[in-house]
Image 1 (cartoon, rainbow, N blue to C red):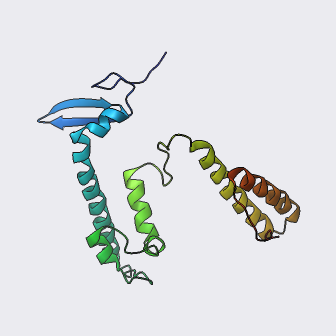
Image 2 (cartoon, rainbow, N blue to C red):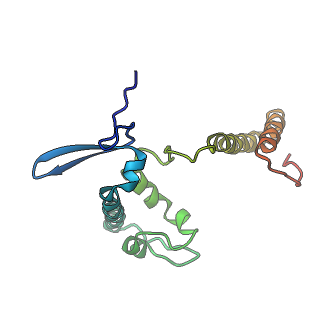
Length: 177
């Protein structure tokens, strides 16, 4: 038995859901991906969501200023905390590490976690899972090396090579052991 809610337009399983309240009248809207892409209402929600994120950035920076926290400044592009709040986006790739705490708090206020768990393009699931396994194995190998557990590190090195072969990654450099 399928428990999915049908699309309000075409009847297909809906994966976009929102509640609209106008003059105390509550309307639940359920759309499939195709109907959602065609909906002007969805597109009109994008700007308000961006404005919400910007207001969160500004409120976080006001909190920091109230706490007399020193203003952060990106070492690469020179973007300051107040400029980041004003424009609402990082100035360069280094801003992501400089303003990591602020960006993390914004993400956590908008969604339940830092890791995106949404849809992926068809056919990319296996490749994504292999990349995740590769990153995990590399981190575990580095940790094994730091703790001088060379036997585990060697096993993980072999596991990494197998994953790289599966991904079609050709690695000409010697292993890091």
